[in-house]
Image 1 (cartoon, rainbow, N blue to C red):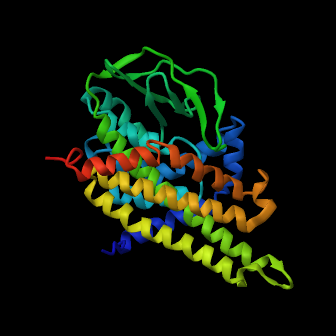
Image 2: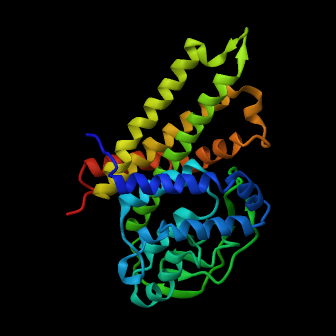
Image 3: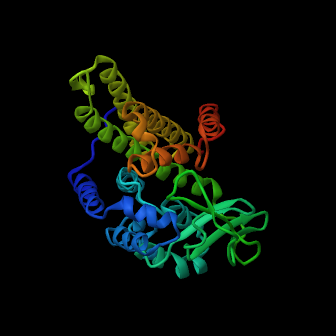
Length: 322
């Protein structure tokens, strides 16, 4: 089955791509990794003004959604430009905050970009807890607003800074929809990964056209063409799975899209690293920002093994909605 975006969705993707291309995200990522958030927060507000986070927030709380297909379209572009910050976790927050009181208090600000959310199980690391203004943690008692965070730790991806959320805090709801929130997180992560893979492929194709060996462009070698073709096929196979999962929002379908898109992005990263040669290993070269993100997204909100298990559970009937 072919999933084609309609004209409005294509225009939305094109506008985000143009905005993010002009924003110099590599500079914002490097500043973010140093704990300097000004440029990243300015970018966050522009993304919110474009309506990205409102796509996850119900209309009752000043959002446009939930609209998973359009959200997937947007997150492909966020991945294509390696946007820093807890973008997936902010989407999760929109799914987790179902109690009317906390939802009315917090969701409009998330939709408008006036707030930023992170989320994690109690006791585990959360993304960018030092800059997030809404910190959600869940334990046996339910969903809580964490009162603070511990020391910041660097991660493989410089755009992802990790903190443990402090225990306690306001109880926001006794029975948060964790399975639904995980499905949204995996959908957004899959879309991000697809965008990362597409960016890596584009950058690698451009590079092998310029790099020469034996007096000819490396891209003219048959072995190089085969590697790039295999990478493109993997990414194009992931695309319909992503948008099909966004239409259905079935946990098994979303898990399949997540593992397929993340594995395709990881393959694109390996191909990019091999074809760039030694320069691909240097942190100063912008390619590294996409290489590390492909690796980090692969393990985020369910690694390959966990997602494959969810797919098998869905096929056996355990994960299907009645």
